[in-house]
Structures are given as structure tokens and as C-alpha cells.
Amino acid sequence: MPEQKTFGDAELCVAMDLGERLLVCGAEVSRVEDTITRICRAYGAARIDVFTITSSIVVTAFSAQGAPVTQTRRVGGPAFDLTALAELNALSRRLCAQHLDAAEVSAELARIDALPHYGFGQLLLIYALISGSFSLFFGGDAREALVAAAIGMLLKTMQSGLARLEVNPLISVLLCSVAGGFGAYGAVALGLAAGAGSISIGNVMLLIPGIALTNSIRDMFSGDTISGLLRFSEALISSAAIAWGFAIPAALFL
Image (cartoon, rainbow, N blue to C red; front, side, top):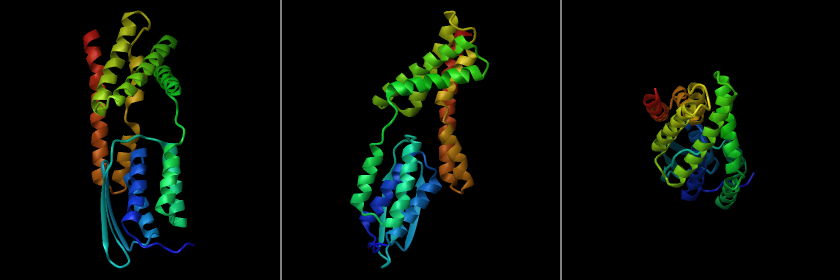
């Protein structure tokens, strides 16, 4: 095994880079903290104190000589990517085993960032499939499933446009919900479908914060109460925005 390096700012920065990407990709807080701790130990840190919440990572580590090193990282909003998450987990294990230097880790992170993603056309089809399938699952007929699929593609287009404009995520969810509700009730008013309920349910499934809610429960069970409550609160607020968004067209049409 290669000789262990002296722990310092560069090594801590490597650990923070990996931890930040894990958190953004959808990892739970306990996984992020454990990964940062293991990497710091692999680089020679004698003691590591890590504090992570949904938007921030703070780490203080002590070298074998007792010199403290501290860094704080502000983390942006989530961009869930399970493929990148698996690659980052594999990289962190390899780093701990082989003690990769900063240049090697940077090259690996660049490779992970360059992994292929679904194209916009593929995402439109995925959104259409999800909306149409859930519409059928909750009792809709073929016409309602087709309308839900069309509205699902509209919502994906809206989400992409609002993301480019850097609109607040909560406002984006609210606007998409309003558009989805008007699309469902508008289709019924035009005679394209018999009922708006199954159409709306199919589109709601595109917007609900399922991963955030699941991670919040897991964080709380893991003892990360603050992070769990923060994620849970965000999921509840987002769910409330979705409910209000679909309720506005319902109140106007009914």
C-alpha cells in the first residue's frame, strides 16, 4: 500500500468535494458524513468532526501532529442522480484503499460529471409514460391516460424552462401544478376526457418529493434529527405547493 500522506487542506478539500457531490446527488446525511470521515482517516487525520445538513457541510479534522484544519462548504439544491451516486460511492472506496492524490480524484470527478444523461426527448417520453401509467393505475381510461401523458410532457418542458431562468424551486413546483390542473380540467371542458381526477393524479406523481421525504425519515432514524426535520419540512412545503397548485384550477372549474 502506498505511503500515507500528511493530512492538510488539500486532503480535506478532496473529502469535501466528494461529500458535496454525494449530498447533491441524493445521498443521506449519514452516508455523507461517514464518507468524509473515512477519506480523512485514509489521508492520515487523527480526529474528524463532521456536521452536515441539507445545505451545508462543516468539517474540522486534526492531523497526527494535532494541527486542526477546518472547511465549510455551502451546498446547492439537490440534483438527484443515482448513477453518479453509485460512481461516487465506488470512488470513495477506491480512494480509501489506494490513497489517490488530489489530481487523480479531480480527474475521476470530471469523468463522473461527464457521464451521459438522458436527453430532453427521452425525458419527455419518460414523463409521458409515468403520467399515463399512473392515470390508468388510479382508474382512468385510455383517453385520460393520453391526456395525462401529454400534460406530463408539458410539465417537463415547463420545468426545464423555469430551471434555465433560475426560478425558485418552490415557485417552479407551484407553477407546474397550476399548469397541470388547468390542463386536466381544460381537457375535460373540451371533451377530450371524462374526468380530471385520474389525469391530475398521474401528473401529481411527477412532482411529489418522494426521495426527499424518504431520506428525511431515514436521517431521523439514523439520529440526524436536524437534517431529517429540514428535509421533511421542505417535502411538506413542496407538497403543500403542489396541493394548492392543483386546487386553484379545481376551484375555478367546479
